[in-house]
Length: 417
Ligand code: GTR
Image (cartoon, rainbow, N blue to C red; front, side, top):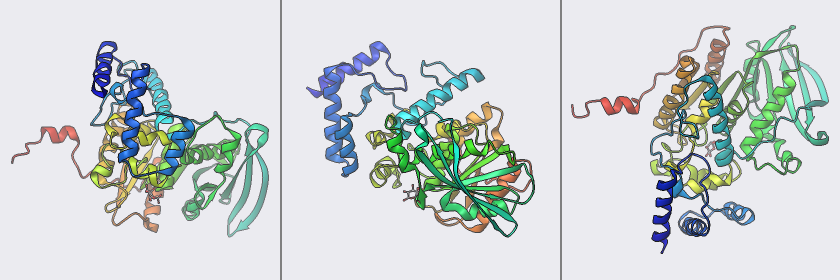
């Protein structure tokens, strides 16, 4: 019986051409029956995730109709608009970027509220450390200014305007290294070490943003405040993060065009490693593992695509493409167990096509370091070298060369020599 349902849906797909990379269109009872059967199968074979089961129950959500979603075993083409046309003009790219951001919010990030537009300082305490002035600030915003967010600014001496190096609370020392180079260091409470963003959930109940998305949105609220300060060089505001914070940096850069540069260090799954090229199938961390071990990092809907990565309507090269043409550094370690140099390079090549199309091929760079997941002081200095170079302050950075060929090069290679 199930096969008849399946066959009927395949005919429906062929007849209607329903293949857009958006929501699979429901087609009544047959569709529901198929999707319920799909979910039962998932619950039978996936490792158990209580958080996911709870979400399934409370949302009543079923998997998408996979028959109606096109398969992209390689990476989806970021230039294909939802109506099937190719992007040919800047205006079409702007449209495509919006479509992509909607798709990301639906499938991986969850939805975000619009900028509240009323960020103000609730509290500020100033102290002096060596030559720098440190301001511990509490921002407040949103309905009745209920949302609170702690941030700290470390200001170098002088009137400015200064470029800004923003990062999460965890990376305070990165910010200090930036201050020694004449940046304003800015850290905010959107990290495991200090996180004010859980408080946003009850304030914006209509949005289903995931934890990392909230942290990215919080970075934008700091930016709202920074943009009011004459001491800030608004054209030079960078956001950096490592690992889960590296994912946050990419999300924030994609959602908010005011970030002028992004440093994404070892961001892995849901970061600069595409889901198609790095997953459990390659003995790596993919959708199944990340949505089970960290059920609140991404939208629970992402878990429907475990083992069906080819059906995911977007992939991570398109998140990076939403940052283009602004500078973006993708850094990884050669033996990082939660990343894959192969996956990163394929993601990088695919994102770089968008950068090239926008006339900014050199704005996206790779940096490799030896060893595993952790960073060393010299890595952070190299990130700052990269930033100095992109911000036209000095020219110190040397990008790493990709190791693997592109798929197109590989196809053309004479494999039998
Ligand atoms: C790992 C996670 C990675 C990475 C890392 C981190 O356990 O699976 O994707 O984000 O944590 O943030 O330290």
